[in-house]
Image 1 (cartoon, one colour):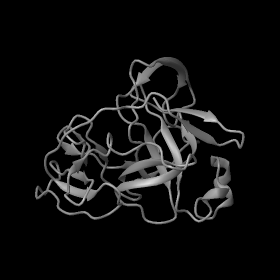
Image 2: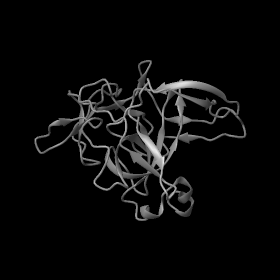
Image 3: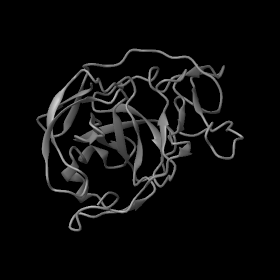
Length: 238
């Protein structure tokens, strides 16, 4: 798993540990260039969206490429890493990288034959309620990372909206590490450079599912944001 350590500034830095090194190969669907956040070229004709697949292209020859395995985690600047946005802010359809498919296209998350949608009404503790309709921030994954199920941790967990906790041993969910990308501009599907400022230790259905919090490297005041508490000083995120 990707590891994090506290820097002297109080922010998080990414360490080059436990990175995934696999490669895949691909099929059909919608396509975007690997180094761009737009350039949607073609999409599925199936109206229910169940067979939609967004593939990445890495050169002028439109060669298929895996957003999970072929994009580097780290950039030339040690302050920043790369991430791949699967779900833009406000999107109501849950998309994810298909880890079992050739070239790992981005596809709709399907459960019980239906495309999953993003909404939460705050069911649970009346004093801890929130709600959203659509993804509140751009959401995606960190390339060349893997939540290893054999790496066990014993952590306190509780149900969202409830205060009672219990200690449970959990392992990784066999997916790349998830990331929220905070930006003051529209972020579409694609590759972005970002600065990590925090991490949420999240457990989903008995598996570790870290949520990294990062700021878009193109945000004009990114140099002044080093941890989550700095966000309150920026109107775009407060």
